[in-house]
Amino acid sequence: MSSTSFKIKKILVLLILLAVPGTLYYLLKEKGQNRYRPLPIYGNKQVANTFHTRFGKKIPDTIYHVIRDFKSLNQNADSVKFPADSNQITVFNFFYTRCPSACTAMNREMEKVAGQYANNRLMRFISISVDPEYDNPEVLSKYSKQFTAINKKWDFVSADKDLVFSMAREDFLVDAIADTSQKLNIIHSPMLILVDPQKRIRGYYDSSRGNEQTALLIDEIKVLITEELRNVKDR
Image (cartoon, rainbow, N blue to C red; front, side, top):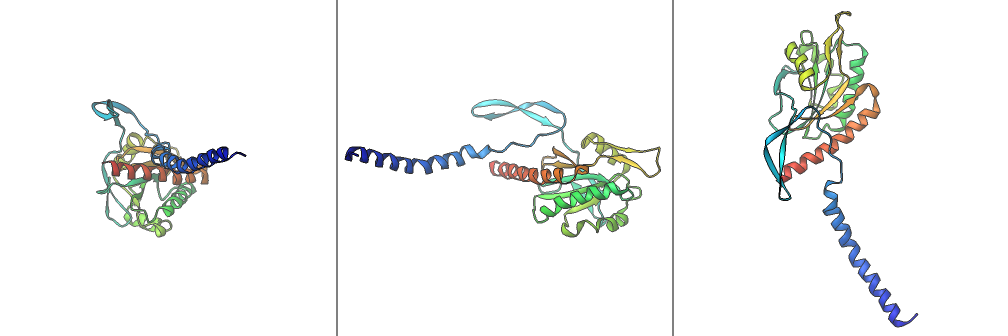
């Protein structure tokens, strides 16, 4: 091997060693910023009359379906507001204490998720009774003790019955229907519902399918937390 060829190879190796760290930094810093797939936003969407600018282009804003503001009483007879005063991600579900095993199974899946995020200040969990005439704070307190030991930010709430059924259908876009053929039976959705700090629905997870959907919810909460932290940074 000639000395000239050897020098050229040394120079090429040196250039590669210098270039690789810079290239990796660029890929991670610039290209890696949006390498995750954002979660969908559910419900009707409308084009707004306002605009935002991106890369010098005016883009129409979108009006998304949102959950209405509401107040309820939890298992401690405390008032629970949605949305909270601080921006938080919320996981909702609908249940009732006189429900057969299905509601307990659903809340066991919720318990798994709540346990994963028990110490995360961005998270909260709300289980809404579809039988509020029976599920007063005293009843909810007794029922909730089997679930909330690992997460004090999980509220079991009751509100006006008409409001609850209306919110289920119109806001959360799920079923909640009194079954007139069977006493004390209320047909309601098994979904765990992920809602972002802007009150938009970002995911539905069928608790009746067990660990598969629960694991998916746990993972997609991480995506939503990342999105929210980036939004806060960009404000």
